[in-house]
Picture 1 (cartoon, helix red, strand yellow):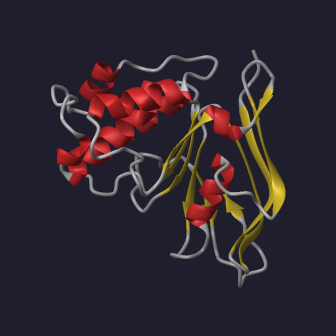
Picture 2 (picture 1 turned 90 degrees about the vertical axis):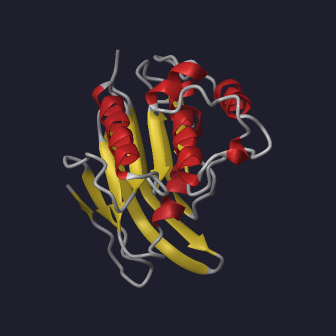
Length: 217
């Protein structure tokens, strides 16, 4: 069985007519985490969306090699959790998570949790029958995080994932991140919180006015 590998080469992207970044490259393997740093507007969120397959890059390539050595689009092997939770307010929590569990499915090499088990892990068991829109902002974010658990994907792409979370919920998410990495998963994150990723690689996004963008380990 081979090592999983996510590789980005010479990525460039624009917002409208403005170049946000260029010549971005990095490689992640089993257990690796990469944290994006940089000021607001430097392209962190855009880079995450490019890697997730939500935005087409101006230039560059992104490849993902599974443990069997096969190549896949990154979107088939990844979860993307952005600023929005991706849940419908009028549906129950169970209906929302059930949709994502069926829609995403499990990638090779792993199996997602049941909805009840995922709710217990995030500390919100017993309320999955409620409409999602009835919940507090913190509860809504925690159930959005549960999306990462109900379908197995080795690559987690997360953008400020702890927004609206209290300290206890932040600690819970940090534990989930560490467990995912320990199991051989990968994490690509834009965050102002440490998330327990002290050994993560760092990629500083400097914005389009700079010529060079350096990866720092």
